[in-house]
Length: 276
Image (cartoon, rainbow, N blue to C red; front, side):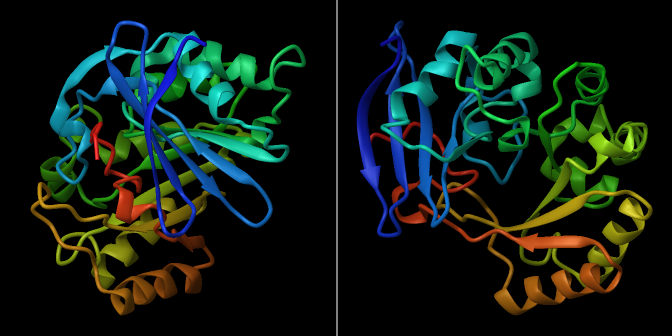
């Protein structure tokens, strides 16, 4: 096997974080999330990340290197362990669309009849909003679910949280999504990390509703997974519920992500190749 399990850490909720060693000795992480009806595998596309989002531990590593297509696919084939119904999300370490060719090759293997025969509806790619790559993906024969990390709903906030916004501001992301044909637009989800006092206000909810008005997209609210190294606090549960209510009243399909694997540093934004 190209990739091997160096160590693994099991959460009280059944989530498993894997520290995986690559052939050159570098490490990446993957997470196995069991659910009632399926297993979700969260895998990495890079070792580290160059984007430096201030609420994400992976960004503190900087970018070490891209993962090859074989290293990406090997994470999933190594961890399947007999799972019959499963989905895969490229939401682990790295910005998948910054490693475009290798990620697309991996997706082709996941979907192909000679590979894992996984429907495209069960493959999700996450991005911080690399607009040229989103437009490029829109031209591909295969189009996975696309999860766009928005978080700040205005450029001032997003500039401070996600430096990539200075290159590809919110308006350019929205334009790229509006250009998608309806059958592809409906596979887009905007993700917002709920940070206390920064991204969780009613005004933020109303602005987000305005941004996605007329689009056939979904919204996923992710309570911040806090850590000592992150200078922010998670939004209060009641505040997140009020935010959710505003969007639902506007007719926007909105979900609140249940945190999984926090106690083993396996939740969204916590992957930093921790050895314990």
